[in-house]
Every structure is written in structure tokens, then in C-alpha cells.
Image (tube, rainbow, N blue to C red; front, side, top):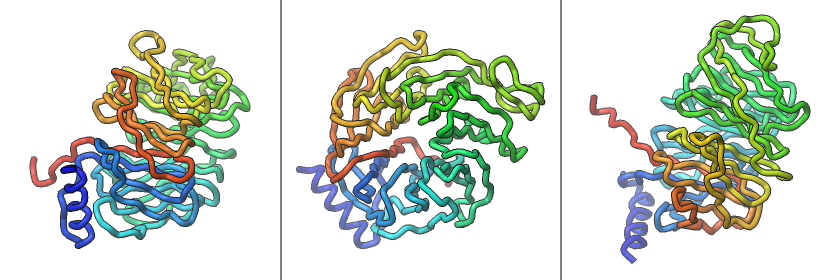
Length: 350
């Protein structure tokens, strides 16, 4: 077919070290077969496979400029080039002592943040391998998210604690405990900074309305929030959503247009909830045969990619609630996926 022929040409250009035009959509998956696979999103063809020999791949994140992809493993984070044939990591970030559970980048890609089962949240300069800053959570950290203000990290741990880390003050500015002793599995913050969602191992999502706050400082508030700085974001409890009864929620994600909340769980289902209609269930995405570990939206929120223990990833049409592409090739569980289909600004234009 023509698409397959173009793919062969692209591979040949990469193999010869030539500068092929990078794809506008970068889609990658990783998992327990110790590989990272890159996919042509529309055809479902895998055009490149990277070996990740140290461990399974826990999380993947593509840099904002689409030049690199970070792979979080046990216990390292490795940075690979996206548009070359180089199979080796260009940088290895050493410092964690257990599974790295989250990885993400600051808006401009200047620094990276991670969380780990070793109980820490770390910040890294992307250009250097050393850890720049570390925050202790006193329990295995399962998830961390960056507030759109770029100055606060929000972490969730195995003991059920949510902590807000003020990057300017270099300290914890706020603590919440939605359910004592119930692990927080995933956190999501709306792109406009209006909402935060925490999903736990009992299938429940807690939702807060966020406002740039003038905290009182000192003691706990009636909402269970302890504020220690005066400019930290304020969390106002908004809703409790039993999203996956009798199941773990493994991922929660707010769509880029802040209209939908996606939740993925151990019950093999992804559910889409309306943020405009009081968290009513919009649709269920049914098709995976085992746990769904991860999901990521396209930039226009029209599509969702999911990763599952059944060894596949799927591309869903959100409006139709249908899977329109399945990505097969992994030999074991697929536990993470990364997608970047956003436009990259041309540095030569103003």
C-alpha cells in the first residue's frame, strides 16, 4: 500500500541519518516486554522499537518539542531521541532507588519531574543528569502532576496523602487526605487550572475546584487542607465520584478542553464523565480484555489512546465511543502510552 511504502522510505531516511520530516503525531507505548514502540497513528503500523533492557517501562512522556521521549523504569529514567535511529539513551537520570511511577516536563521542556515508590518527588534539569531538587513524601509516591501555573507539583501516595509542593518556596504548602490509608493511584489537573481530580484504589474520584489562594497559614481548615504559604492554590471540595465500583482506578485524566474526565480501571473499562453535566456518565469504552493502565487525549480531545494488560493499545473516537485502531505488537502487558499531536512553534517565526 502507499502508506506502507512511505513508511519504508521514512525508515530508510532515518537509517541513513538523513533529516526526514518528523511526523506531526508522535505516539508511543511501553510495558512489561521491556520495549518502547512507536506507531504510525492512522495505519497502526509500528515503525520503530527501542529496547529498554533495565526493566519494564512504567511511564512515557514526550517532550513539548517532540524531540525526545522519557521512559520511567526501575529505578532509572532514560531519555531517547524520537526522530533518529539511535537505539541508545542520550541521557540517564539516576537518583531514585525504586520504581519511577510518573514522569513529566515543564511547559517549555526546561526541566523534568518524577515520582517514585522510594517516597520522593524529584526535579531534574533536562540538560544535566543530576537531580536538582527532592521532596520527601514518607510513603511510596504513585503519581505526580504539574499545575498549569508551573510552580506547584501535586503528588499522591500509597498511604492516601495528597501533597502540594510549592516550587518557589521549596516546601509542602498543602496536604489533603481524601480517604485515610486508601492509595491515591492517579492525579489530574485541568489545563486551565480550574479542577483537580484524585483517583484511588477503591474506584473513587475526588474532585476539587482550584483557585489561586491567599491561604491563612498555620492550621488545618475545615476542608482538611493545611496551608503553610500564603500564595498556594486553594482546594475546595467539589464532588465525590464512584467511577469504578469494586475496582482500582489506574488512571484519571481531564480532557484538554476541560469538558470530560476519563477514568481507566482494573475492570477493563474506560469511562468518560461530563464535567459540564454534573459528572454524568457520557460513555463507556469497552474493548480491552484486561486492566487498562493508562490513557492520553489528543490535543483537540477528539481521540483517546489507551494501554492495557491485554498487550494492546487502542485509539478511540471519543464522540462515537468506538475503537478505530488497535496497536498490536507488544508481547506482554502495555502499561503506558504517550501522545503528542500538538503544533510545535517554529523558532524562526515570531
